[in-house]
Image 1 (cartoon, rainbow, N blue to C red):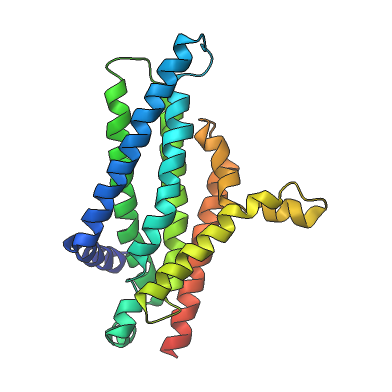
Image 2: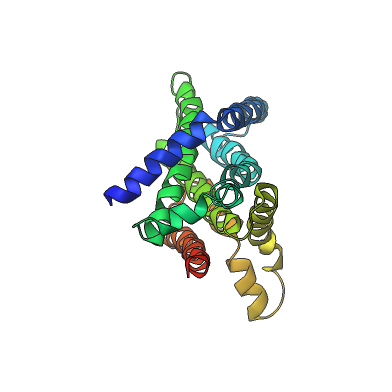
Amino acid sequence: MSTVLSIARNETRRIFVSPLAWTMLGVFQFIVAMAFVKSLDTYAMNAEMGDRVTGVSDYLTMNVYGFASVIGLFVIPLLTMRTFAEERKSQSLTLLLSAPVSLIEIVLGKFFAVLVFVLAAAALLAVQASVLMFGTHLDLGKVAAGLLGFVLMLGAFGASGLFASTLTREPTIAALLGFAIALVVWISSMFQSSPGWLGQLVGYLSLITHYDSLSRGVFNSADVVYYLLFTVFFLWLAVLRLDIERS
């Protein structure tokens, strides 16, 4: 475990030393802040028109956090594209693979570094939500469920992005592959209404299907388990890909 943490610490330093990570966090916060203000404005208008059912927490989790997850769909592949592809291009990956550490430790270390970035983005969302506590009632359970869904969603993007980065030596191609994988699994929910078991299965495997309940503030262990299995699956694929290269 100490090896994993050491790799994660080095990768985290590498991520945040780069201006790219700070730029992405800044752009992410700016765009989400606009969605935050817009959601508050919509909530105020609907409240004036007599809507007493939908609370501000619902607008926050369904609109702002849902929109933030869409932004993450674009941001995370840009973050993970360098994890293995750039090292392969600079030929430093050979040294990493020949080091006396397991492939699982390497992959987990890099994934935890990506997860630190995701948690930083989630912390920014939590700060936005905390501002509302001074002027209105905030359902902290719904907010926590929405933030959990956001972290799980972006963690899944990170795992698929890491796998994509093991497939090529070009970071740009790795970013496109990571985006394509995440997008395909994201939009597969459109097949949920298709007749037959295959359509239902493909729809069930959609990332967004399992995010819906969390965005409504409903904690369902099945959704959490799905995201964890999705993440573990792509991390396992990354390990298998590196094992082929090491051998």
